[in-house]
Image 1 (cartoon, rainbow, N blue to C red):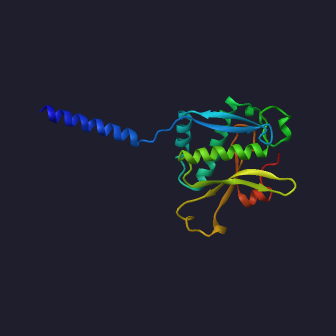
Image 2 (spheres, rainbow, N blue to C red; image 1 turned 90 degrees about the vertical axis):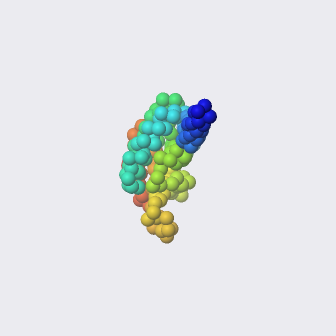
Image 3 (cartoon, rainbow, N blue to C red; image 1 turned 60 degrees about the vertical axis):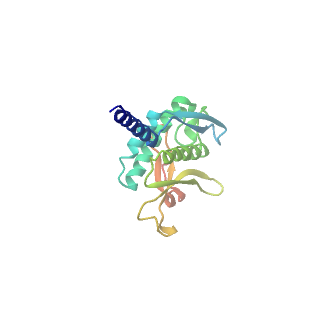
Length: 197
């Protein structure tokens, strides 16, 4: 009788340990934030486990790539708000002209670098199911502009030819801190698309 109780207790303990080990464990994540133009300054923002859980929950609402892009736009605004609580980037305004040289202002180098880091964090935490993060996109020769970039993935695109793959600029430079990022097809963005700032 005692052996049976001990066996049951050990089995329950092993089941508990196996369940705990199999469950994903997420912790706070630190992300470096660039600001003061050209990444002249960098400061780390720490996103809490609760904030990352919120991010995963919100992003899980998307049923397709289009919905995911809309949620990427919104969640990036929220990530920048949280970053602005820990760094001076709360002072950032859309474009470069409205910044007025305030500490924490961000140009397209700062935004493309930081937004790419945010997107990579989202990717690491399983928040992107319909897109993958690409290298920073560039447009222009003399007057250049940079943006974060994502590429649509999914069953329909797994074996697609390169010219049919859909890529999108994710450009937070256009907007004030905390506002949703602008997400445009990369060709439209390269042709100068986006708000007039």
